[in-house]
Image (cartoon, rainbow, N blue to C red):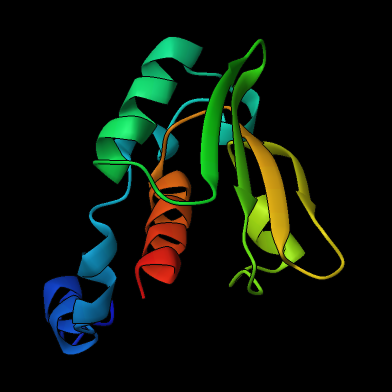
Length: 131
């Protein structure tokens, strides 16, 4: 006779469920990143991507510019204060050619595909400017 488990998988999952409410501020993860090709290998339509980024920002942000390029949307940020970024923030899936100046007052990155990483970056930059 085989050994019987004292608890089922459902019970174990319930016991180990961790509530992290602060993550909900960024919304759900984009489903297209969960299966299929990796985000860094796929490209969204540049016009649609630019429109989505502008809708997400819901207005202009001082020092932030978005422009349509062949390979994606070029995001450039210039500020008189140090930006709340590190170089790895500009090297996430869906990003390319990320550059942060040595004084961290200017940054640029080409956005190739829409996802949670893009929303987080836009939210962080908008919050920084508005504070």
